[in-house]
Image (cartoon, rainbow, N blue to C red; front, side, top):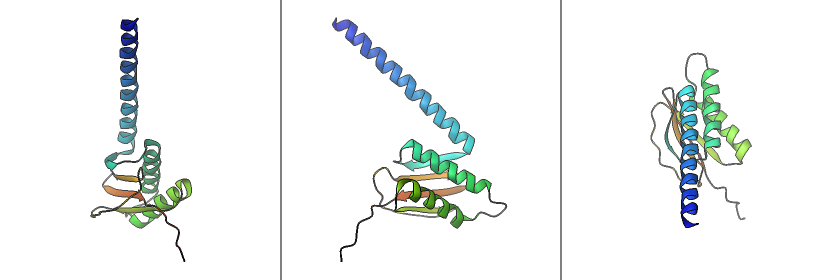
Length: 128
């Protein structure tokens, strides 16, 4: 019986690894399609994908010159309305930053030649 249990566990691990590889390949295909490169993140994949799609839509809707403020505002509003306040967004072709963020609320990525930093901070009520 012990051998059967080990074999079942081995097969289960193998199938899990195949599923993980498939998900990673699908994620990479989506990144390639949107021309996205993740630089750093601790954000769940569904939230990352929403940020990529929102940024891509904003960039595609801009004729000519890059409007960094418009992209930043659109991402902030999208995430504030979908996931609650206090999201912050920095967009540009060259910037430095050092931020404190809530767990699971940090994404730094590039799309085309634009870099986007999206992060969430905790909101503390004011005591009067």
